[in-house]
Amino acid sequence: MSVPTPAVMARRLPRPRPRQITGRRLILLDAIRRTGGRWTTGRVQSLYALVLPSHVYRSTIRVDLRELCAAGHLVAHGGDYRRYYTLPEPTAHQTGSAAERSAEPHRACPVDDGSAEGELHRHVTRRHGGRYGKASTTE
Image: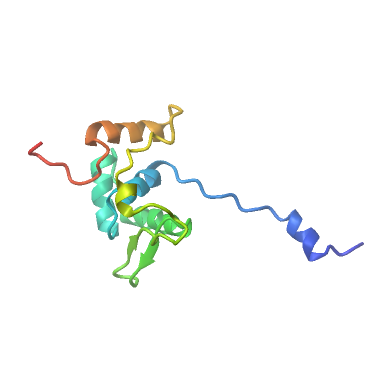
């Protein structure tokens, strides 16, 4: 029996698949990219109350934020009791100013296959005009 070399073992190991952002997390990431700033569990809970049909527990929100952070979409700041998340700072190879990026038109729904995720995204766009802030009563 031969012992496999590290190079052979590396080829046999399954490669981690990139994490797909879907559903609730896709809505959250889109809102964070649109508005920027610090995102806490409470701020996300307010967003979810506006755009989702059912209640989302704070523990679930924490998991959503941690997963987006683990995927490299967000950066965590603060300690255990004052944690907040922001978008990562742009690197030197990223082109365009923040003003140019914010002036981009809203991208089409990335899930346009009739799924529940796509329907939720379309609902938010129709009902809230693509905005995820507090609804204004003076409009």
